[in-house]
Image 1 (cartoon, one colour):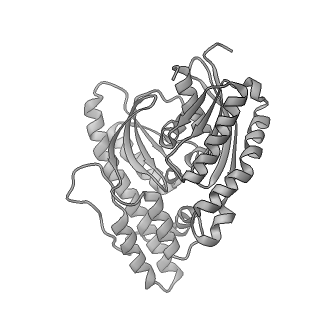
Image 2 (cartoon, rainbow, N blue to C red; image 1 turned 30 degrees about the horizontal axis):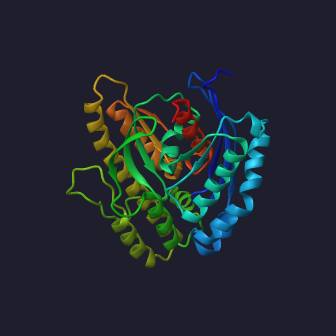
Image 3 (cartoon, rainbow, N blue to C red; image 1 turned 135 degrees about the vertical axis):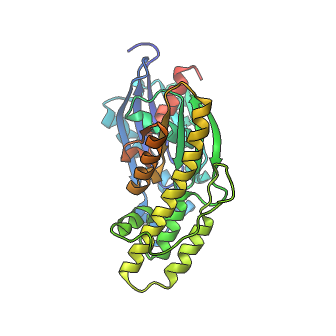
Length: 330
C-alpha cells in the first residue's frame, strides 16, 4: 500500500443504529468497503412508535464493542492494520454520540492512531462515493428523518447550505403521518408500502411556502392536514389513497426545491459537469427517488444516490469521511 492509503474504522451511533465499518481509500481516491455492520434497535423502540433516547444510548453501550470487533473480523484485518479511526461526533442524540465517540477515542489512544470526529451530515454527503466514482463538486439533497437540506458540496468538508427545512424534516413527516394511519414503526417504509396502488389525487393536500422563491422546505402543515384527514378514514382503500397523496406531496416539494437549487447551481458552475446527489434515509423511497431523477435529467444533471444499504445511517460513510480528511492531513 502507498503511504497515503487510508484504512479507517468508522463508528456511527447518532440515533438508533449501532454501526461499525472498515473502509479503505487508496492514494488514487478509489474506495473499498471492507466491511459494514449495522445493529438495528427497531424491536426495542417499536412499542413506543419512535426512538427513545435513553433506550438507544443503553443499547449502544451494550453492543458497540461486539459490533466493532465483528466489523474488523469481516474485513479480515486487525487493529494493527488501521491507519485511523473515525466516529460520529454529532449532530444526533447526545447519549448515543457519546458512546461511539468514547469507544473511538479508546481505540485511537490504545493503538496510537489519529481520530477524526465526523459531522454526521458530512458522512451522508460522501455516502454516494462508497459505490460510485463521484468527484467534487456536486449538489446534494440530504433528506432523512432528522435532516432536510440542499448543499453545494465543493470538496472535503466544504459544504454551503442553499436551503433547509424551517420546521420538520421530510422523513419525520413520513414517520408521523404513518403513525396517524396506524402503521408500525419505522413509519416511512410502511407508508411507502401502503401507498402502492393508491390514488394520489383523491385527497388534496396543502403546498407549503408557495409565496417564497428560496430553496427552503416546510412539512409541518402537510403533516397536520394529513393527520386531520386520517382521523375520518374508515376503509383500507382510503388509507391507501391518503398514503399515496402524502408520498406524492413530499416528493413534489423535494423536487420543486431541488429544481430551484439546480437552476442557481448551474449558473455558478457554468461549463462544469453538473452532478446531483440524493442521500439520507428518504432517498430509499422509490417514488421520491424517481421524481428527483426526472428533475435532475430535465436540468441536465447526472443523478447519483447511494445503494439502499448506505442511504440509512451506517458507519461506512463515517469511515470514508474520516479517510478523506486523513488523506489531506486533516
